[in-house]
Image (cartoon, rainbow, N blue to C red; front, side):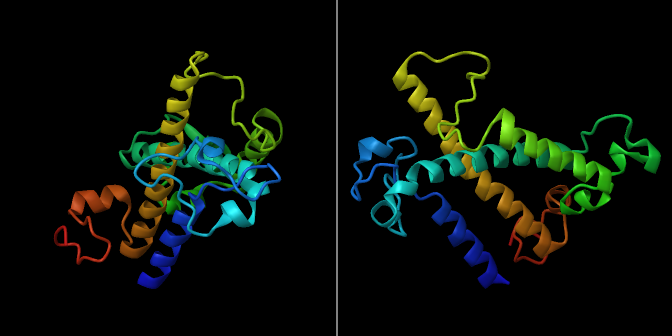
Length: 207
């Protein structure tokens, strides 16, 4: 199991590698990939994709950005739900299922009726194909930064780098939460309540 976790973490780290640009050249400069190139790692490319697949950089950066956005929403949702903050009323009146009846953690998805899961998938498809299409690699969907349009290029680059780095942290965070939940059999809330912080511990303390 520890080997599987290590493999997952290595795969996640590889996902953060700045991938190559759409330019035909097989050699890219830092200035061409400056978004996402931040300290302390700088240009982090352990698999050598900058040289081997430069044409795929733009798509990979877009995929990283979108995955980061989804992961940030997932982390916030996990924290909120594990603190038992839920909507009032029914998730499915026909199934007599209230929002408060949905368990926290990974098992929560199993409580959602098939029709509800179908609606979620349909919404994802709408976002991915029409509202925020995956083909728009720059990630700018015209909504601005909290409703405002940033004119200063340096300020915009700083905030885009903040978004990328927060997304990277969120991807690691949500993956770590899911792995810990599977290993311990406890949700985030249950782990904190029991003082069971280490997934390899005995549940009696931090380690």
